Image 1 (tube, rainbow, N blue to C red):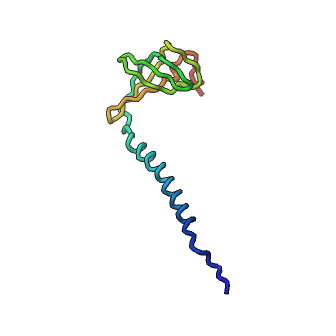
Image 2 (tube, helix red, strand yellow):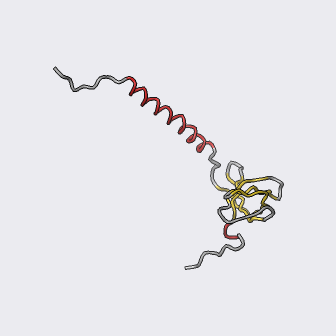
Length: 115
């Protein structure tokens, strides 16, 4: 008499478990990192500026007035060493400060049209 039941495949089950464990090994640290690095809520924003030290599309290394160096996303517009970029300094509830380029204050960028 023939049986339709498949034999237990230990290799297939082990391979599936290895995949699940492999995915978990990659995803769990990413999720933990995102949860751990949460700076809290935005407390304040202030204008700042930084001088470009180097630019590797699309990231620029800037020196701030305090002497600190930060990397910011500048985008595809070309900047060169020595350019001064307008920044916004965002201060968060955990005390961290994150910088971003003030795109509205960049020279040569037209403000959005009013509707």
